[in-house]
Image 1 (cartoon, helix red, strand yellow):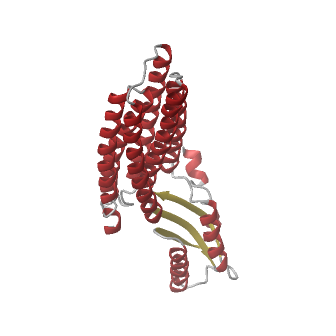
Image 2 (cartoon, helix red, strand yellow):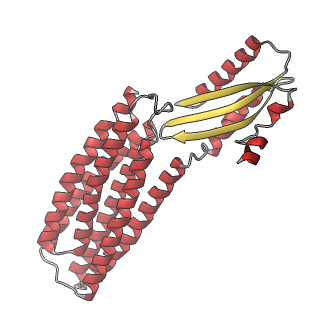
Image 3 (tube, one colour):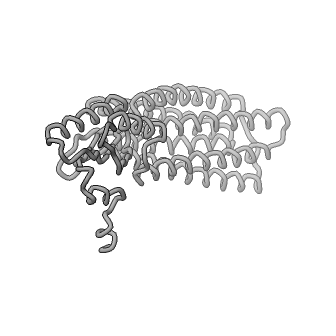
Length: 307
């Protein structure tokens, strides 16, 4: 759990970068009047809110299990990811609305060279921070840090697109290019925001582990299927960085409790050795008992009829 608490420092890094880049881009907008640079500043504001949400979710997720949350608090990271995706979508709509207004009522751009320099500095800061967060997110399997990193990288590509638009205005004199590119940037941000919301919703819906990990679990279980031993009701899910696996193991009814228990210990140890951060729950059943075959689904037949 100390490992999860250490992730909080990355959220503070993201907050510091968001504050700095937001100030830089806001200054660039005031100097140039570029709606593209305004879109960049707005997204950095979203970065700040998202980074604060990430900090809170990481602090909650690092809390140990308690009586009210026996499975831990790691699912809190999905709320942060979903919130970040929603904020990105709102910012994208604001950017596109501003771009449309500027197309209808164009305004000249000023001091473009200085604005470009400021935006480049902000983009570099975002890129460096995003790479740090992305590596940490993948290493520690933190959906919060990965979402924050993806958001910052979107900001980097957004900045690149905006700079291209401003440069195009400088070269061609066609001021309409600035809001058109800003609108395109908004569409790209919509795509990223929707992706984050979808990924978070899948985590909150207790989606199964990736197919490759499930296949690895099945292969390990099959290794223990000696004569009279089988398994069913394999269920998996992931909550942030924490994995959960449950399975029913059926053995000959003549086995002693000790022998059955020893088998389950071996199965659990093998799965824990194959996957990181996994909690394994096994259930022992006699293969000859028909009732042992009635819980393949989540609910037994009589429970489904009662429902």
